[in-house]
Image 1 (cartoon, one colour):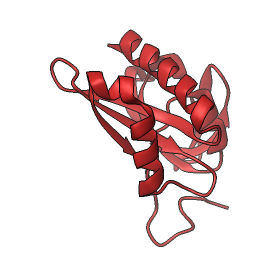
Image 2: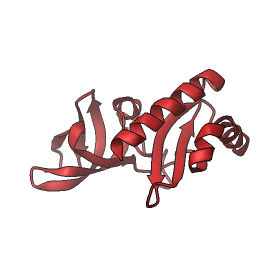
Image 3: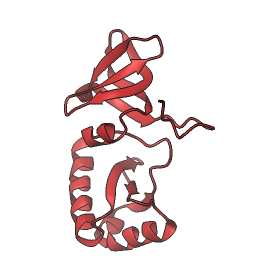
Length: 154
């Protein structure tokens, strides 16, 4: 399933780059047994609106022939998957679930202080930090703190 998702990402990213150069494919989600629904999470400077979602959906005719296609904004609690996603959100609070335990734990929450192609580092509430390998990442997302500046901590 992972290989299928990566192949879909490449096809979709190429189509978006050609027709919508300012639109980023943030994430792809396949659901159903067998995979029948495909949700694309897109973003662009200035945000995503319904008209953009409809235009992207219409531009992906070949994908719509194979899947029930949904196009959406990543939202406030945006998922993080790729190294560039983490780098773009340094200083934000994130929640991470690891596919493989690190130090006997799978769940971590803290401020993202460093990110590269191999790992991320979180400052935890207890004052310590943890470095987590991206290869063992299950899922991660930005934590939106209601009533604050969108999760930023100074």
